[in-house]
Length: 348
Ligand code: SF4
Image 1 (cartoon, rainbow, N blue to C red):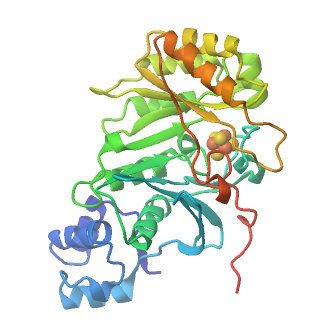
Image 2 (image 1 turned 180 degrees about the horizontal axis):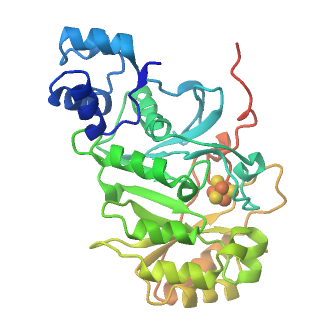
């Protein structure tokens, strides 16, 4: 079996080089070629010796997800349908802006968490992604996008609950942040969770961790139990206790995402409760007006309800932003990621 290189850290590649009788720095050159220069064919890694390239051709491989389909939105957002080596499909979203680009990555194929407003939930959990498959989404999309901005942000908010695929997700974060590779600062990487409290506590203890966002979406346990059954396991009091203990770096804030569902969680009383829940936290709230998903019976909030929700938060001293979702016309917006053929084998 050839050794799969995608997903190996710098240290692991250095060790591999050593095991092959090469100096350890060859592993670093390989890491640089793969993650910093995005050269995926060994023949193009001309910084390596010819003999090492020949050995790599024989004994190693780089298995990137394959681009099966691109759906380009009128606003420039691209939703990628990517095919993994075992035939599973996942989705990755590319969002270009004037001075930065944001990549929304999947950490699992499908998801087991079953948030009722989310299209991905309808797939169920198909499987965890490996660190290489998570990092590979970034490499493939960056290689596919010729016009790039100076800054890349990563959000782990695509298919899946990242804290239920903890090791692979954190390993991918280390790959993104390694200064000898992609060199994406940790503060430009955001992990979004539905509220897996043991995962939040574990992340809090990591020396090198991404920023944390919590997908909140409700302000009472009864309301959140109904929208996000994970709340029955980790209710609001426990979730906010973990958030209050979460260590923040200078200028870092927690993010609370709040999908506004018309007539469900968008009232003035909800907004006032949200002010109370977030009291004393260094945090911001992103308000995300619901995006229609055909199979789900929710409706978008009115513009008035969205505005007044934000005003109540702001009057309560909270930082609150309205995030109009991007890529809605290609189903790339929050809660819409669920390729219908995610479990299908590849076309042969
Ligand atoms: S919102 Fe996130 S955690 Fe919830 S079902 Fe969808 S993908 Fe899973």
